[in-house]
Amino acid sequence: MPVTLTVAAIRDVTERVREFLLEPAGEAPARHAAGAHLDFDLPVGRRSYSLIDWPDDAPGTLRIAVQREDEGAGGSRAMHALTPGARLSAEGPRNDFPLRDHDGPALLLAGGIGITPIISHATALAAADRPFALHYAVRSRTAAAYADRLAEQFGERLHLWPDDETPIDLPALMAAQGRGTHLYVCGPKGLIEAARAAFTAAGHDDGAVHFELFASEAAQAGDQPFEVEIASTGQVFTIPPGRTIIEVLEEAGIDLVYDCQRGDCGICQTGVIAGTPDHRDVVLSESERAGGKVMQICVSRAKTPRLVLDL
Ligand code: FES
Image (tube, rainbow, N blue to C red; front, side, top):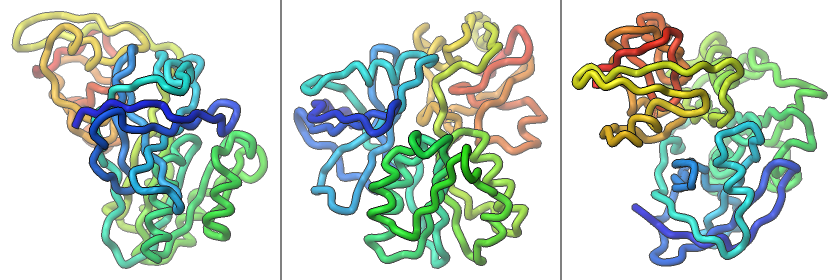
């Protein structure tokens, strides 16, 4: 559902993370559950930010936090340039990362700014008196958004792992979990993949892993332009570094189906007829990656100069 929001208040949470309290400028968005996000239409394109719920929030509170990526495509810089009173267009809320019903405890794991939906999960689990632990991996204590508030709210259930003091030991963490634990992880791709691998290596069920990718906007160093050919029409487009296949094709008026734009929902999956994808999602299995016959066109790029896509 489209919504117009007004920035009601802004504050810095860390040197790079800024919090925004939003208020509906018209009809209020539908009530959201833990893990939901809003999709914002910014001048640089669509960006998704998770809604953060704290235990004492008034109903309908809309809070997001955005980490500034100086090397990014401009979404976070556009957000950081906002001032109170600014209007924002958004869609949602949507929820690709809900809490599931299960008897076992929840192991919440956040990497960096991936803490935002995890805070809402902790709040919801605490309110429902469900067992959980929250592990938060960060570069340093000063880079940990909401560290004091998290400690105050969740006490001994919070475990902070600053890389420069005590880096998180994922195999040890997963080995210490009881049977029936469900893992909820949000952070960069490397963390999600390592956590999932450690979780299953410790004998837990892969079906009990729930994740949401926090995709940095920053293009990877060394990204090159490549071409995409639309098999049905023969049209060819160049995808420059810093832009996605979806962004370029949509701009050209091609109708596409997608949702998360982070490589974790699987909706934009597209057949590859020729060329080799450079997979950057967290959806595909190892055998699907190796097969190279499908790709997520919201994040993945190409290892060959041209991809022919089944579109
Ligand atoms: S839109 Fe979700 S994986 Fe591409």
